Structure formats: C-alpha cells, structure tokens
Image (cartoon, rainbow, N blue to C red; front, side, top):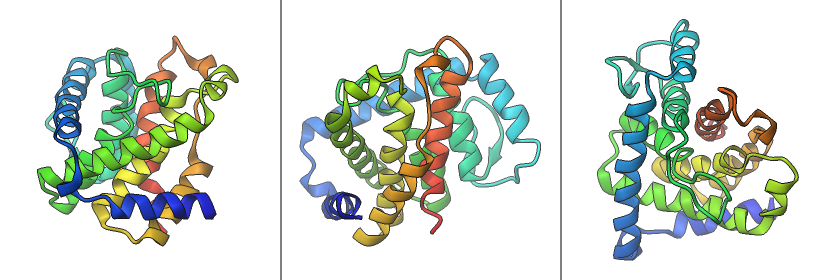
Length: 216
C-alpha cells in the first residue's frame, strides 16, 4: 500500500488555513456550477431512472436528492445526484484527469457532509483534497488511460470521492490509504458507454463508490 499510504499522508496533512485564496475561489465556483448542472439535469431520463430504482428500497436519511423534496441515505443520494449533475454533460472539465473533476466530488461531499453536519470550510477542504488526489493520479496515467478506452471521470473520480470523504471523516493516513486502495477495486467506466445514459451513471456510481470505500 505504498502509493496509497503516501497519498493518504498528504491528504491528512492538508489544512484549510493553507489553501490559497485562488483555490478557494475556484472551489466555490465549482460548487455553484455543479449544483446548477444537477438542478438542470435532475429531470433527465437517466437520473429519473436512478431515483426510481434506488429509492425503491432506500431508507429515508439526512441527504438531499437534488432537485426534489426527497431525502435518503448518503450513498443513494451521491449516486442519484452524481447522475443528475452529469446528465447534460455541461459540468466542468479538467485536463489533469481528462474528464469532469467536480461531478465525482460534490455529490459525495454534500451527501456525507449532511450526515456529519459538516461546515462549509469542511466541504471546501474536502473538495480541494479530492481534486488534488484524483488530479495527481490523473497526471500519472493520462492521456494513455483515456486512449485505452477508460472514462476517467469515473475511473479517476472515484479516488477523488474517496479522498474527499476520508477528509470529511477525519480518517488517519492509514485509513485514508486503505480507502484509496479499496477505491481502486471499485473504479469502473468505459468510453464505449458515451452517448448513452450509462455515461452520467458513471458519475453517480463513482461518487457512491468513493463513499463506499470508507466502510472498512
């Protein structure tokens, strides 16, 4: 677990007080942008199907299903909200992962943050930590990763969602490294699904799997 543990140490070491003003500014813009995309996409077919399927057996919980009056458990909310935010494909793009960096992060951060009663500062720090984690991994594998047929929003975003969730939960370096290692086994998404409703589902699934990786 050498690489995962090293990333875990760096994630744990990040403090809100050390974040550059420019990073916070763009994080706040990303919050608004991603939420706007989610509200606009909430009534598209993919998120409607996700809500129908996932809410059938889901329990009521603390996490808001965006664009509705529904509340459910964090993993279901992250899944549905990630699907909504990516349904129209207008969410932000980033060269470091050759994909959409915010849509794996914010659905997980908001869903878990509501359960934990996290502050705005907590959410911003978790976002930057997740963004950095997935971006660093992305720089190591792209664009070869993309050219081989993988959908980096999902396959790299799951690490960002795991890192952000670990930061919110205040996990240790070892626990964070374990979560990242688990996330590696939950990474999935192929470009062959582009043009179908499975593409936005990738975003929902990686947000959910980032949360799921914390259950250890």
